[in-house]
Length: 334
Ligand code: KG4
Ligand code: ZN
Image (cartoon, rainbow, N blue to C red; front, top):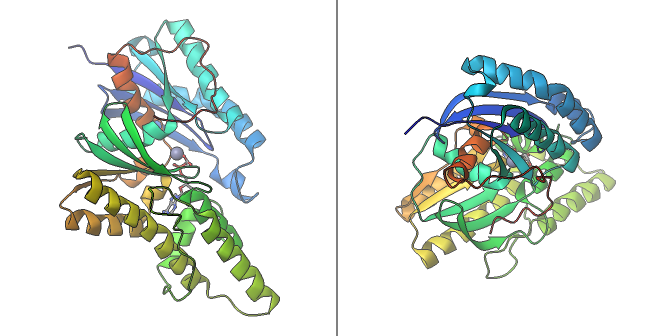
């Protein structure tokens, strides 16, 4: 079979990224233009600024991605693009670029769900074996699913309120740490002990998650101590938060190992960059003799390579999008 090259575009949040992916696995080139330094000044992503910066970056990022691969648009077989979930204005920049390239060069267009992209990021460095348990832990989502085959998902549970990444970012902010908060909370936690008693984010016996109570408990704790003029041990608080937050993920995955007997766990999304999470999942997988897939750091956070990989099964099935493709607020993956 002839080699298939997909040009992928990802612009759902604060990274303008493009990649060329060969045969749904091999990353030929990847470019990520990050806006982190700009948004850090405001303590979080400012949507209007994000869209404007995507508009400025999109053509240079395309040029660089083609140049690094030493390829021309004519050699590309299809264009994959993130259409949900994300900031509408940011998504639209990537989608319009994809549609324009599709029209000019007469290439099929493939809309990709960003969360599914995070799962497929694992295929770059591992072989994915079905059925798998898939744990999505990103800035906006916390979901546990069964993946039976390519694009065949069954939802076990999801967050009823805040995502774990959102809780990390909020805790970072209340501790005075810079955006993006997750990696900074992780660094601080390394130096601390879990000495604070925090409420466990347990909702019930289902697979659902809830992180808003834990997040609010920390915000209240910090404010109360400040009002009383007491010092907060930030390292200890970061460590206490991290253990409670991650242990709940472990508890739910363990329940799924027991109840489904599935022997592969794939962890996806920005929070999968967290070393404590990785270490705890490694222990759990050892206990249940399960295989653990977590991408390397580059592919944990937002990047277009994962979109190119996720677009490939759709390419093979000729599941192409038409020019009505638009930013969607329906991010359901099953
Ligand atoms: O997947 P991602 O890059 O963007 C979304 O799709 O949301 O995830 C971003 C989230 C942010 O909440 C960020 O704080 C968190 O992932 N994150 C981390 C770490 N690196 C990124 N959280 C904990 N520890 C990390 N090392
Ligand atoms: Zn993401």
